[in-house]
Every structure is written in C-alpha cells, then in structure tokens.
Amino acid sequence: MDITTKLKMNNGKEIHQFGLGVWRGGAETKNAVLAALKAGYRHIDTAAVYGNEEQVGEAIRESGIPRDALFITTKVWNEDMRKHTVKAAFELSLKKLGLDYVDLYLIHWPVKDEYIHTYKVLESLYESGKAKAIGVSNFKTHHLQDLLDHTDIVPAVNQMEFNPQMQDNDILKMCTEKGILLEAWSPLGSGACLNDENLKTIGGSHGKSEAQVIIRWLLQKGIVVFPKSVHENRIIENADVFDFTLNDEEMALINGMNKNLRTGPDPDTFNF
Ligand code: NDP
Image 1 (cartoon, rainbow, N blue to C red):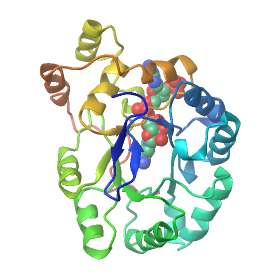
Image 2 (cartoon, rainbow, N blue to C red; image 1 turned 90 degrees about the vertical axis):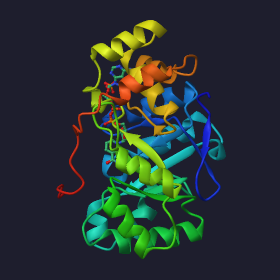
Image 3 (cartoon, rainbow, N blue to C red; image 1 turned 120 degrees about the vertical axis):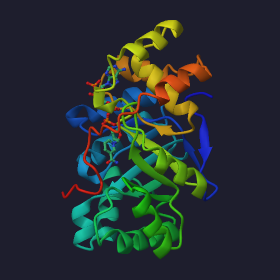
C-alpha cells in the first residue's frame, strides 16, 4: 500500500484510497492543494458549498500533473436539490474547477424528498461521461435502502463521518455488502480525536503521531480517507503512513473507541 494505492469501485473504475480534504481550507486552499500534489497526493475532495472549487482548479493547472493521473470529487449542495437546479450546479462546478469531467460527483446530504430526483440527474451525468462515477454522502442505512429501491445505478461510494469516536458500523456493513466503498469524512474528528492516550501509546510504539495512527487504521479497514490540512508539514505527515502496520490488537483497540459521537450534524435531523 502507498500514496497512490487505488481501490476498485463497483463501476470498474478506480479511486485513490488516500487524498486531501479541503473543507474550511479558505484562502489557503490553493497552496494546500499544491503542497499535497507535490507530496504525491492525487485525490482531492471538494464540494460546491466549500466555495473553493476555483482554487482547487487553479492548483491542478499549476501543478502540471496530467488530468488522468488525478481523482477529483465534488458535491451538489442542498439548495440546488431543493430548487431542482442540479444539472446547472454540476456545470457550474465543472466551470469553477476548469475541468470537463469529475471523477466522482456526490449528493452532499440526503435532503428529505429531494435525493431521489437528484440522484436521477446524477445518473444522467454518469451516462454522459461528465461524472466518471456517482455516489452519495451522509446516507444512513434507511436513506441508502430507499435510494437503492428507487434508482438504477448503485452508488460507487458513501461518504460518512467516520473516525475513532464516530464509527457507524451498520452503514459500513451495508456498504460492504452492496459493493459501495465507504469514504471517511472528518477522519481526525476535525481535530477532536487527537490528544488521545491510546492513540498516543500506539503511535509511540511506531514512531507515529495520533493523526497518522487514525489514518492508517482507516486505510487498513479498507476505507477511503482524505484528511484536511492547510499546513505543508501536516500534509506531508498525514501521507507518511505507508511504512508501518497496525497489528490486530491495535486495530481492535481503536475499533473499541467508538462513542457514536458526531462532530457534525446527524443526517436525520440536520436542515440546512
Ligand atoms: P479532519 O478530520 O481531516 O481534520 C482536520 C483538522 O485537523 C484541521 O483543523 C487541521 O488543521 C487538523 N489537522 C490535520 N492534520 C493534522 C495533524 N497531522 N496533526 C494535528 N492536526 C491536524 O477534518 P475535516 O472535517 O476537514 O474532514 C476531512 C474532509 O472530509 C473535509 O476537508 C472534506 O473534504 C470532507 N468532509 C465532508 C463532509 C460531508 O458532509 N460530506 C463533512 C465534513 C468533511 P490545519 O488545517 O490547520 O492543519
């Protein structure tokens, strides 16, 4: 396993298992993406609502890395689902990114009464080739079952909050059974999972930080992970996770840290 390791999605295409998240990257997004690409990252996770697709696009162009070596994800925001402007939102994202296709296009949140018609637009974008894969985010098991019951293309991924203190193993199990890759958002709990004694002890025995231990744990569980940082030293640190292995006991210890404690909203009750 290394920084370019890819997992096969259910449509036969591949996704880099490790990448960079850019939520709350702010004005530093472009430099963060450039630093990540320089460090060997090839997968960037953004979203229309992050307001930084242009910066991601600029960094991609400046890096000179061939488009087909990169994996770029963006997401449709709730407002466009409610207004039925999903296709226009997708075209705007492409324009801002300066790309003629994205590797993965996701429904950001399972907005009640809006996600089925939205996903049907995503299916048409997939058929057009402008979205090489489509999927969902923040779909609990009941949202996913409803989607599977009313649409044709099984999502390639489901992007959920997943970190040591928030492990939704029901959705992990369902995704695995249905051939849907799980992507972990807020792998570090936006920072809240760091400074933990167990993680510190495990890291200590491998010469690694708490952040590196968490990232490695997710990779070994077969989950896609894209920690966010705007600091080059942390961007490099977060990718330096391919020269050690957590043993079964260490994996079990972290699996046992679940508190079902979200740092973000619950998909059933949020309403933005
Ligand atoms: P993470 O769990 O990746 O944590 C990021 C935070 O941890 C930042 O404050 C960062 O600070 C800090 N950090 C990063 N690396 C280290 C390190 N090695 N040591 C100490 N601190 C560190 O948070 P995110 O919530 O950003 O999640 C990652 C990505 O997931 C997002 O960027 C986004 O792409 C996606 N996401 C998707 C959501 C969805 O609804 N689909 C919701 C939330 C996130 P600094 O930047 O200052 O270094």
